[in-house]
Amino acid sequence: MLDRATICVRAGRGGDGAVSFRREKYVPKGGPDGGDGAPGGDVVLVATHQLQDLSHFRHRHHFTAPAGGHGRGGGRRGADGEALVVEVPVGTEVHDEQGAVVADLTRDGARVLVARGGEGGRGNVCFKSSTRQAPRFAEKGLPGEERWLTLTLKLLADVGLVGLPNAGKSSLLAALTRARPRVAAYPFTTLEPNLGVLELDERRAVLADIPGLIDGASRGAGLGHRFLAHVERTAVLVYVVDGAEGAPAALAAVETVRRELSAFAAALVERPAVVAVNKADLMGAAARDEAASALRALPWPRAVTLVSAATGEQLDLLADELDGLVAAARPEELAVTPAAPAVLRPGAERLEAFTVEREEKDFKVRGAALERLFAKADLDNPEALAYLQEVIERAGLNAALRRAGAAPGDTVLVGGREFEFA
Image 1 (cartoon, helix red, strand yellow):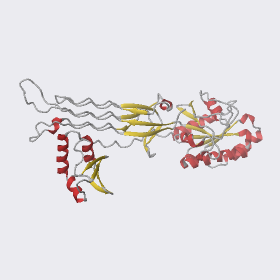
Image 2: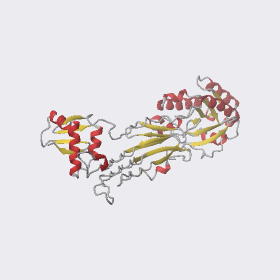
Image 3: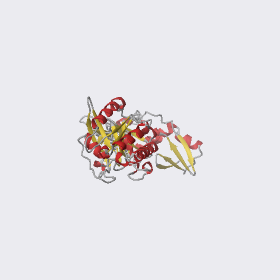
């Protein structure tokens, strides 16, 4: 089971605007008719129950959406880049490079846009005016967003079976459900979480067998805190202890597990809980009474049940307890989706909204609208450069640079590009 993966998503580049002029018989000077480039495709993550883990990301880490189509003559706009849909299992948490949560996809069909396609460039028809009747330049499309994301799968289960290694969690899961986890008489037999479905009176409950925890697991000991994350989404916890080792050992095991859960996430020890004393068939009457009395003296468990996964003893009683707890504590399935990113369109921001900062000998210009304007300009085209000069003059950039102390020959940085101030 692969429950963690790192991927790179890249949205499609926007299409370039077209430089074209109307050419028809008897229309000698038809004027510009170059269409706009289309935006590139977005990258969208979608949760689905068809996937069980993140293993399909084991050999593929890069996902790139199609680019937008270029504009064409006759005022024809390019074709929009198709969105790239990347499927992930339900329960996937998405983190950005800084570790912040981008989305928590806990419902089938939940989706989040993680990379927005680049904006398309305008065709030359957009630049015609009374003084510029035949513009021979157009804008370039902008590159799409590119991000590295970390995907973390946290199992969605109603009940989590937790306990020390070799307490009989896998045997209990097999006895309660039709799951067939690996079972053996040595610690750390379970190396990954296993799921099973428990048929209750009026509902079903999903049980998760979490690999054995040991002292220091929250700090990475044993199987570490990697699998502790799978406990976070469970509504009810079942502390499975080995009753054959005696009451003191059972108490110590419960306290060890609760201490590690609390160190990982304090809210976990507040979850509704049941203590299942397993291997009751190996306990004498005195040992049963001692273990039951010691564990029932604890203030937090809803119930303490002596069970045997081997013989099926009192498994019905344990199932009834879980039925009531799951019905009362089942969490609502909510998909936490961040606010939609701002859509950047031509003219959405004022060109005059920029700042000029001096960095040693250079001058750095910051402003979303201006940076996009420079990024889309065809700097190899003299007409495009002339138009760019007109726009930045009207926006007041040259005056602002002079006020900041810029002199001819100084370097000006705009959106990662270098220019010489003249």
